Image (cartoon, rainbow, N blue to C red; front, side, top):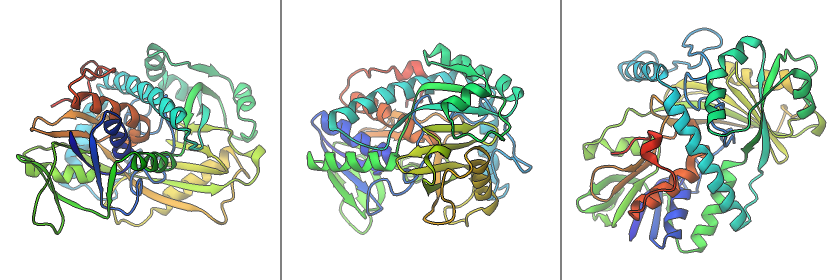
Amino acid sequence: MKIAIVGAGIVGVTTAYELASDGHEVTVFEQRSAAAEEASFATAGLLAPHLLNPWAVPGFGHALRLTGAHATLRLAGGMGRANLAWLWRWRSAARQHSAPAAALERLAQYSLARLKTIAIQHELDFEACDGRLVLLRSEAERHALQPALQVLRDAGVAVHEIDADAARKIEPGLSPEAPLAGAIHLPEAWAGNCRLFAQLLRQGTQGAGVQFAFGTRIDRVSSSPTGVAVQGEAELRRFDAVVLCAGMASAALLPALGLGLPMTAVYGYSVSAPLREDTHAPRSSVVDMAQQISITRLGQRVRIAGGAELAGAGAEHHTPTLQRLYRTLNDWFPGGAQLSSSLQIWRGARTMLPDGAPVVGASGLPGLWLNTGHGAGGWALACGSARAVADLVAQREPEINLDGLGIRRF
C-alpha cells in the first residue's frame, strides 16, 4: 500500500520503519527540517521498565500535587476551562491506575525487545546503557511505591529493594552526604539517546526507500478520499492509508474529521551537560522519585530531566524548575557534570491523555490510523506501538494483544 505518516518524531520514524519493512511505500511528512526535532529532541532517555519513570502514569506511585514548591504539575497556563477539564479527567484516571499501569508496562517491555532487535540488526549505536536505580529519600517513599513494584513483579520485571550501601556500590558516584534511605534496583532497565536512535533509523529507512518530506506542514487529513492536504497546495495528495504520529499536531487535525481526544501538552525540561569527572557521574540512569527527576548517562554527557507544566509552546523557561534540576544533580552527583558551559537546555511537550495511555490502532474512519498520545513514554513505547500498528494495517493480529492491554481502540 501507499501510506502517509504525519510526524517524524520517534513514533513516526519507527512506524515508517515497520511499515516499510512490511513492503509498503511510505512517505513521512514533517513540518520541521529534520527528524526528532520536537518532542523527541532531548528526552530523559529512559526505556523499560517504564512504570517508575517520571510521569509514566501520572499519580501512580507518587502523590499528585498542584500547589507548593514540589508541585507535580505547574499550572503555568492558569485555571482556564480546558486545563480544568483535563485536570478533572486526570484526577479521575489516577484513582484507577493499576490496570493501565500493567498494560503500559507490558507494552514497554515488548517495545524494548523490538528496539533491541532493530538496534542489533542495523548496528545502531545510540548511547545505550543498562541498569537503573530509583533513589528513595525516606522509607515512606518505599512504602508508596509498593503497588507499582507489585505491577512490575507481576509483569516479570526484575526488581530488587536494596539499602543505601548497596545502592552506592552500584552507583559509586552517589554523594555520601545525600539523604539516601535506600533504592529500587532495576538491573534490566535500559536508557539511550532517543533523538540519535531516531536519526540513525531515519537514515536507514530513507536509504531503503522511505520518502521524507521535511519542512512540510499538513493542514488537513481526509478519509474519503484518503490523503493529506499540504499547506499551500490546492490538490489533495492521495494515499491508501494515513497514520497520525504527530503529537499535538495530530490532536489539531482530528476535530475536522469528527474525532476528538482529550490530549494536552504537558511540558517538561532537560539539561544536557558535558561529563566532568567520570567517577562522580552516574554509570547509567537514576530516578529521584520524590522530585520526579531523572539523571542519565548518555555517552560523554549527563542529562537531567524533569518538571511538568501546562503552558503554551512559546512560554519562557521556568527558572525555578531549571534550578531544581541543577540542585537535584548536585545533591546526588556533585562534580559529575560541567554546569558552567556547553549546556543544552530544552523544553519539550509530552502529548498526554489523562490516564497516560496512548492511542494505537484504527481511527474508525476508512484509511486513517492513529499512533499518538504517548506522553512521557514516547521513547519507551515507540517501537512496540509501531510494530502493532504495522500488524493492524496488514490485518494481522499483533504479537502484543492491544485489546488485552486496555490500550484505546476505535
